[in-house]
Image (cartoon, rainbow, N blue to C red; front, side, top):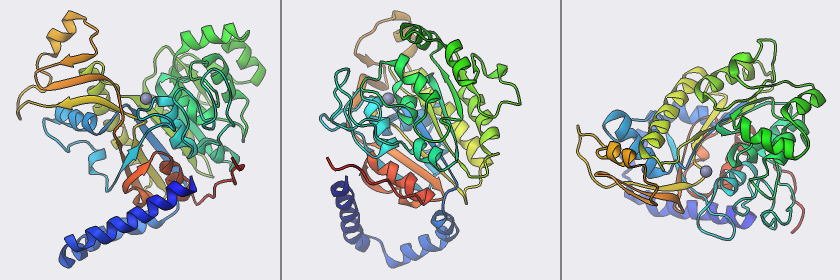
Length: 397
Ligand SMILES: [Zn+2]
């Protein structure tokens, strides 16, 4: 960890030295003048951090979403943010990451193995636990902030799970979900809005428990729809068959904004492009939500961070401005084929996770730390530093 960080810092310094002569002094001073107010904002501590994760939203997917949504590149709201870095997502033993390692690394600052939820790298999937690695959400709970986790996917699935749970297997939803009710720090996740009700319910019952039993034991109702949550409930849990993340995020903000000590919120929106049109449309919709959130929060005291847990094999390799990017999609959809490679006229999809870095974009308090290439674990450091927190000493390995 330390080695990686000092390496990153020295690489950044080297890069600065190498790149500096390429800019003219004139360009630099112009940029400095324009960005002066933004720089002042970024030097401030963050009271709040919102982490937006487009699951499988790599550079090529973000690009394609802009083209799909707006007929041109660079039109997404997040593409207007001032700070960009490239987030390297691999697990400790392979090149390609799954959501479990990808999100665990971001949330804990410790890379692990695919399939493992916020445990150290000596965990073996389904066989052996590693040590639990403390998540940013747990740091926030410990310090009395309000916390929220929101997902279009199952709330026990790898990406949301890595914020609040620790397990040697991402598939153990019957073990993962109840951990939200027996937190290691503070009073646990305050606001949970996600999907996966049927499958989580089945796995809970295999563990001899249920939504009802958990509710009663912990005196916390587990609603099945956002609309069921009474206005009086300041710490609602909703596990639905699906989740309207747009409505859920705005509702969560209503609650989090009441917190005197600030908040941490993680919002996941699935962006897998196995179905290219659906995946790209998800990114367009996610970006619209992020724009709404950005208008609402005070960026002087809030860090907005956007990234992906890993990349995906989609490429735009054809097409022309003013024409349909998704030409041939309807025919492909009608064939109902499940091939690994989807060849549309302008879009090629190798329907799998890929290893290359994903974008990390930032705006607001502490955002200027996001630059250059870095390992996914660095985003944990970015959020900790934005809050002004120091990491606990880790046990020697
Ligand atoms: Zn993922």
